Image (cartoon, rainbow, N blue to C red):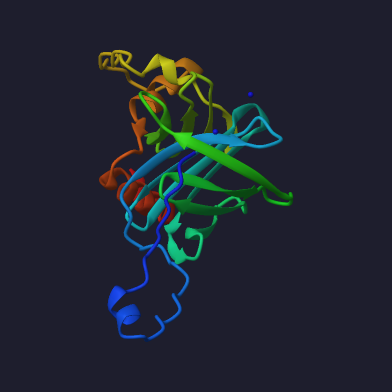
Length: 230
């Protein structure tokens, strides 16, 4: 169109040594299921697709997109503890699969598009404006959803879905920092279908960055039941 590792060690109990007793063998370390929040972004290796992953406690929300390739897949679910970190295997409404492992600040895994093979991804912390953004709005009585991933170096991608059709989303820089003004309301006998530019403006005004526990909770509810997004 990128990571941090946590380590744990434990010393053998001194009392057991002094008493001449062997210390019991240690069980494999299993990471707690209640980590803090993380927000990371990265790339699907071997493609132009980008990925954003945000966690809060044991909840995870992720988005994979390549607007030009009409790819936009949302994921949400629960991380379970394992020997190499917290892990989840998630499915999207479009039939894609995301296997994600969270080990401290290190978030990695594989993405499998519907009908395709697995591709690895790596991420790095989302700093500044970088991150995962989602938008869900109603236009002419129909739901329009969109998602973007913005990397720290400014590279970005996004996909918008309307009437079950996917297309490249309007760029993030149009709203990061300063939002476009809302068009004044006018009185019309009939409401025409929005032009592409007007639709972009509506979608942009609905955009929210997914970075806090409340954002993750809202996005999880939305992905599980789209009617709750609106």
